[in-house]
Length: 159
View: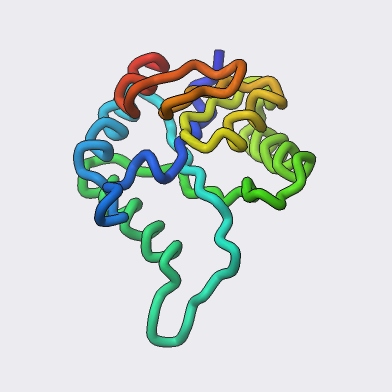
């Protein structure tokens, strides 16, 4: 069982409106309701291929990061943070595992205590490989992950 201090890791895409690529108010509400149960949340996102900030415009990923923090704040909660992980096609498997082990160390938990809610099979497989729990919000779940139809059903399974 994960300690109350350890965050549940939720893939960023599950919190967004697919058409607008902005935080989805209903999903943010589900997240905040989950947090009110005493759970901390850390959002996971794919590391961008390259950061593109310029003097007069903000990088899309940083803008989305700010929008998520603001949406959750308006709903009455707070994110533990956003972690960018290397889960791309060319990322090395060991590098992904090392990132998860380092994350567990930062929160003073064992890697097997990590819980990830996501849709990216590579990310879900990585948490399973380090002994953690994976909840897939996707049509198909990797071996070792439980499958859920929605973010709400996955969060309910953790409550």
